[in-house]
Amino acid sequence: MKLLIVEDELSLQKALCKGFAKLGYAVDAAADGEEALERYYSSFYDVIVLDLNLPKLDGIEVLKEIRKEDPETRIIILSARSEVEDKVLGLDLGANDYLAKPFHFRELEARVRALLRRDFSVISAKITVSGITVDTALKKVFCRGKEIPLTRKEYGILEYLFINRGRVVSNETLLEHVWDSNADLFSNALRVHIASIRKKLPGDIIKNVRGQGYYVE
Image (cartoon, rainbow, N blue to C red; front, side, top):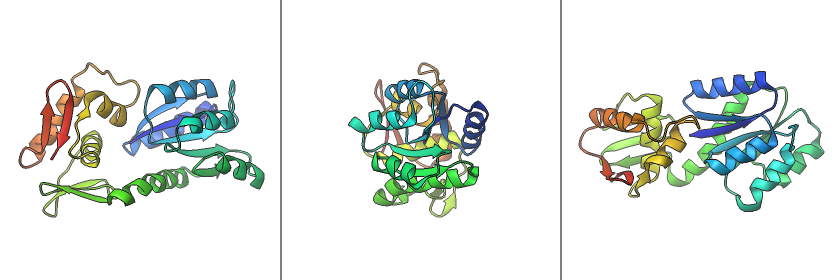
């Protein structure tokens, strides 16, 4: 899962990025509204954590711009503004959640997980293909009830392939979802991780379409 943290207070921005990265998320960051939109238009994010008081372009304008064409990307507003009117405005403009500062990281992380679960509840928290089960709630993989140990990156790759089972997922898309914006699209990191996953899973569940990407069936 990939997050965009939009926060101009650099100490808080770094703390949030570090916290989510430790939990296995791919994380990008922006320090102002214009940079946030540049990031948004150049990549895909599962959740955007958006501060309201931003330089160059405030968070409300960023939210409006995103929601003009994209009703789906999940957005959590962070703000020192705790008045009811501010919360109502943000939610009415399309934010999925609103968290007033100061807050505890564990609460923000729980809200991110809750937003992600909304999609997973539709497709089922457990996805099974060829005897392999990916539990998106526990973030674990099982084969006939026995857990298969995977690294965070390996789990992220396999989870995304399972969610899109039956469809070819391009190398670029996998890199965007599992790595951050610093990922080298021409490196062999993805290929190495796929090879490692294949060694840990029974059978030949991950298929490759030369020049296009990977899929599971």
